[in-house]
Image (cartoon, rainbow, N blue to C red; front, side):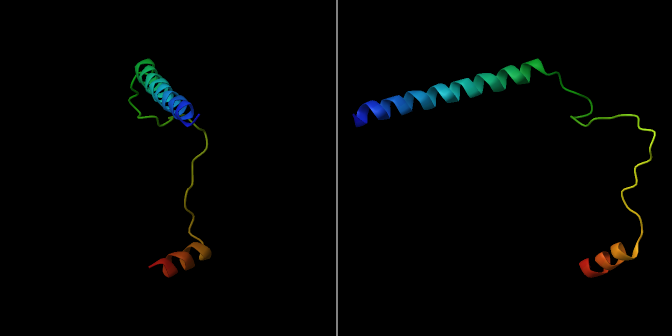
Length: 65
């Protein structure tokens, strides 16, 4: 009983690894390399503001130094 279970698990592991490797190879072949390395470049009418000088930020930066 134990040998059958071990054999089944071994077969399952080998089959799963083969399926995963096949999937990785298929995905690598199907997607052409992008010049932007996966970064989405768009044209937004809004200007993105990532930092605005406020008292809270100043306190944070003083504490972080």
